Length: 426
Ligand code: AMP
Ligand code: GLY
Image 1 (cartoon, protein in one colour):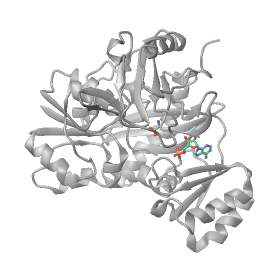
Image 2: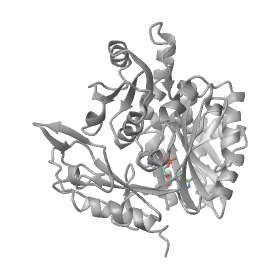
Image 3: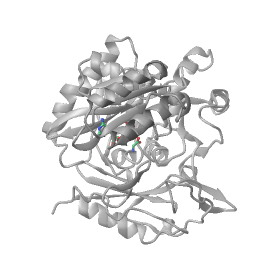
Image 4: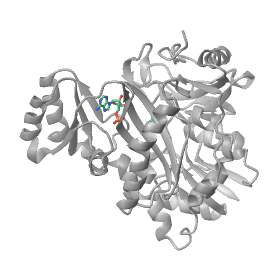
């Protein structure tokens, strides 16, 4: 069977690697892909939110399953587009329809969903420009830090955490009145600040049953010791020591089951990944956000730990037989360290030739922002490559990552040297 993966990051390279190991797949395509996916699959140059282009690629290449990496095509309704098209309607799409994708596409929707189904999350209220003054008054009732969230997708930048009340009021006005994040901030969620340590929990569901995949911890800040600007993610670790069986059982009972049942009750037929970003406050989990896709760079540590055939699991999702499939997880620790362009997440230069990555032996090199120019692999994004290694401990896996990174170079390459600093066994 021919399968198409949509997207171009490290996450999609990890999907491609895992799917390429399935004997059941004859040809694998990635659109648009990167220099890494090109070695495992056929890249197709198209924008995944251009549904007509996706349709042409699917029909031309006799594709029988589409796996959607990023959220944008899901929120824009790619799954609904397939179902409404007479040529595409029987081709399964791994990823929710528009109604389910709202869990990520609208913070207001996801907060309402959690409240309705009794899922633990921070207390909140939503505001528009019409009730801005109520929003200002609401801020005055809260303790700092203040959390403001643009309702819609804002390229990962729509969440502001402010320690000062006057700044929070000014930002609320910027978002609602001056459309700081365009349409995405025409509604703003103001919520209580949650203390604790963050964890990414991943669930695959066919709408009826679900599998909890390995959980991971992501390092989002650019600077060592979790300082500086937010990025797409600078590294990740799986499993996470504090997310032991007891804690995950609690997450399953309090969050995963009510989420799956809530979707069913609300008539949302959800087939795909649910990424639960949660805060663990002294053993009590609450949801910070839902995403309707896998995380990046979490995928680069989660998928390598799945020993089962990923395509078989996807077939279970498509035919709603996931409960019959087994999902075997390796007990090994996987860590990944992201190599990024100099000055990322601010403006950065591209087209830097990447050297040495072919000589890496003890790690998996996942390409993210890379492309091929004049026969050479060059950088093409802020996050360039994720280097994943296995070990019996976090420390052992990370040592392998950093030894592999010593072999790789490109102009102004940057990476965090302290991934896992808060978790390493002392
Ligand atoms: P989100 O896009 O909702 O994941 O928010 C981005 C980041 O902001 C999260 O990963 C958290 O680190 C932080 N964050 C969001 N909401 C809260 C909250 N209520 N309390 C504390 N931190 C938060
Ligand atoms: N690593 C966080 C995300 O993918 O949103």
